[in-house]
Structures are given as structure tokens and as C-alpha cells.
Image (tube, rainbow, N blue to C red; front, side, top):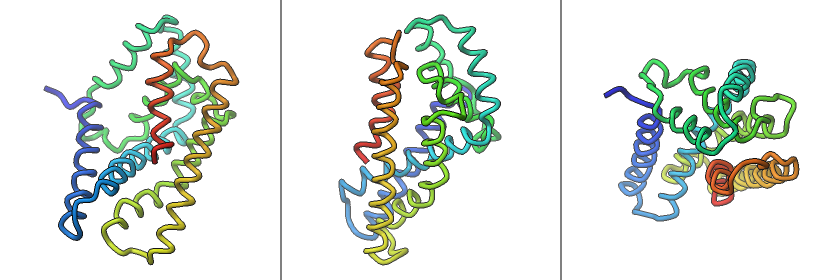
Length: 205
């Protein structure tokens, strides 16, 4: 059975979250807040990598998102089919760190929000900024919950700023998404899962 996108994503999250939790338990103790933040930081680090793909492969994303829209019916079932096909796409080891391969995330998501295939939009720039600005603070948080990389005050201030930036960016993104009518023609289920849930995680963080 070939390795597919779903295997890579789940395997990465289990491995990185599991390692962070295990090391923390060995050094300190089991802590539910640390478990949640380990998962969140692991996920955010992955998405930061995807956001670098958004920044540096936007021309590919724009072209292929247009082709995907032309070949996809404007229906919930067709959009679900495209998303499902993405998660079942073969993803060999040689593609795990390929920006071009993971650019598929964005030309697929562009079915729900075309701003991610357009470098002039807020959605594009907030995620590109997040990818460049919050990757290092995210890794610092992931490791710094267990090991004293910096003093506690500096650690707290860096994470406060990073999480606040992510919160504000998410609020503004939701506002632009709904006020610009990008939800029109899509079911509440689609918007709730593929826009609300996937972006709402940053409120929890």
C-alpha cells in the first residue's frame, strides 16, 4: 500500500506530539496543557511549512487552482471528492519536504476561498506572514515547555505575541471571508468544516 498524504500528516502529528509529550513526562510530569500545546505547535509548524509553499509557489497555485475550478462542478459532493482525493494522493518520501508538492493544499483550499490563489488578498498575505514569522516561535514553544532555552519571562512574552498575532489574524480572516461573500453557494457543513474548523483551531491556541 503506497504512502498517501493522510498517512504523512497523521504520522507527523503523532510522532512530533508524542515525542514532545514523552520528553516532557520524562523530564517533569504528564501535563494536559502541555499535551494540547504540543499538538497545536506541531500542527502550526506543519502549516507554517505549507504557508512557505503558498509564498514561493503562488504562480503554480494560481494556475492549477484555475484549472481545478474549471474541472469541478459547483456542488458540495464535487468539492468533497476533490478534498478526499487530495488526502489519498500518493506521497513518497522524496516529496515530504517539497514545497511544490504541498502547494496542492492551497489550490485545493482555493475551491472554498479563491483568495489563496491571489497574491493581492488578505488571506494570502496573513498566511504567508504567519509562515515566516511564527515558525521559530512555534518551535521555541514546543521545545521550551520542557527545556529552559530562554528565561521564563522572555519565553512568555514571545509566545504571548505569537499567539495574539495568530488570534487577530484569524479574526480578520473570518471577517474578510464572510463580508466578501466567499461562503455564498456553499453549504453550512462545508463552511463549518473546511473554513470554520480548520481556521478556528487558532482561537483555541
